[in-house]
Length: 214
Image 1 (cartoon, rainbow, N blue to C red):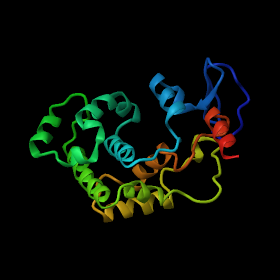
Image 2 (tube, one colour; image 1 turned 30 degrees about the vertical axis):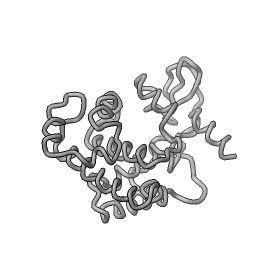
Image 3 (cartoon, helix red, strand yellow; image 1 turned 180 degrees about the horizontal axis):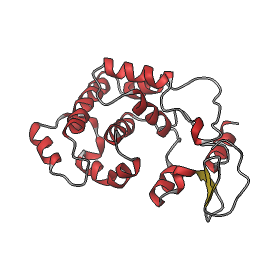
Image 4 (spheres, helix red, strand yellow; image 1 turned 45 degrees about the horizontal axis):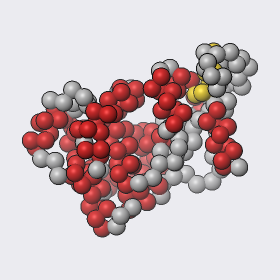
C-alpha cells in the first residue's frame, strides 16, 4: 500500500491504506473498519494528549492491549475507567491485593493478573512522581517525542512498529520500574497521544494536521 489514491468512491479501499466513507472523507484504512475505530481515528488518534492522569490512562490501556486488538480495549474502556477510578494515579496506587481479586472477577475489563498488577505498580510510580513535582510524568513522556520534520507515511507499510525514540522511552520507563512498557507498546503510545503523526497521505486528519502545523 504505497501509491497515491485514485478512487474516491464511498467505502473504497485503495492501495495507500486510505478508505473513503459515505461522508466522502478519506481515512487510514484501519480507522474505517468499525464505527468505534472511526470515532477514535477521527477524534483521538494522533491528537496531542497532555496531563499526568490522561497519559497514565493511555499508558495503562496500551499495556492491556498487548497481544490483543485495540478495538477490544476501546469497547471495554468504559469498564476500565469505572474499575480503575478514571485512572486517577493516587487512587489506583492505593489498590490492595483484595482489589486485585475483585478486578479479576470484573468482566468489564481484560482479566489479566500480570497486567492488573503492573497497572497498580505503575500508578504508584506515577503518583510518586506527581507528589514530587506535578506534571513530571507528562514531561518525561513528551521528552522522547521525535524532534525535527516528520515524513508522513504514504501507506500503512511505511509506518514503523518500533523507533529509536520509542526504544529510548521504554528503557527510561523500565529504569524507573514501569512494567509492560516495551518499545512497540511505547510507539503505539506515541502515535495515540500525538507525539508522532502517522495518519497516511490522503487521510483527512493528515490534511487537517498539515494545516494546523503550517
